[in-house]
Length: 308
Ligand SMILES: NC(=O)c1ccc[n+]([C@@H]2O[C@H](COP(=O)([O-])OP(=O)(O)OC[C@H]3O[C@@H](n4cnc5c(N)ncnc54)[C@H](OP(=O)(O)O)[C@@H]3O)[C@@H](O)[C@H]2O)c1
Image (cartoon, rainbow, N blue to C red; front, top):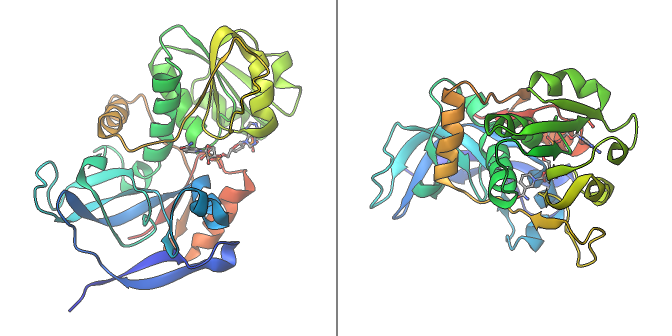
């Protein structure tokens, strides 16, 4: 008999009214792939952006199975997979289908989850951690002693980025509103800026690297905080040709699966230098509430769906 599973799917683009919890047959993993019994999934801005229509621009085709970040247990392995086996506890990012009881993924994209974290907290790391790593270290060239500004310090990405940058030895300034000041300070920042109290570009300057997780006006104003020859990396904005500051290097990051970097993130967790902060946990059935909170832009730390 075909094994069935619950999954979250959209048949059309739109608001939360297009989001459906459906029953689907489980796929069998092909060569190089594994099937994971998902235990928890991170809920991220990319999920409601895809639902709103970004899926089309990203080359996805309807129906789309939602969900981009998971932790779980390997349940079946395809031909030629020897790096992971049945029963291994794993975490990582997936191109789609993470809000489901089972998902089939490339075995190379996932690694063993940190032993000291449960599934809920393990699911809070992959997308934010990889985005921070690929933005600050790969694109930004961040090194010990650099002065770094993170524009959104309290979100899923920023709260991990602060800790990763501190572990690399950077001097970290991070922004949020005053309600998140205690949280952001608890992550170990050297300086906190309440972006609602004054224009941040009037109190921050001479940064070697700026990591922008907010976009829009924040991205445009962030140019003023970078030193000549410094770098502004964004995970959100779409920088045009007309750069307001010609002596600032601008980079746009699109996060990709990377097993080596996931393993480095796991090492930071093992060493006690990276702790994910889960703000809210929703049950699978409450996925639309989780998406609503993410879309509000007010989440503190991560939003997680408990799947099993
Ligand atoms: N390019 C990629 O591949 C990639 C990958 C991952 C994420 N991203 C993008 O990165 C962005 C951040 O993701 P996330 O998961 O960190 O989002 P998130 O968790 O939803 O961020 C919420 C946080 O943003 C803060 N915030 C909102 N407006 C702000 C502002 N003007 N200045 C400073 N902080 C502000 C809020 O704090 P306050 O309430 O204190 O304002 C809140 O704590 C999203 O747009 C996401 O799509 C891109």
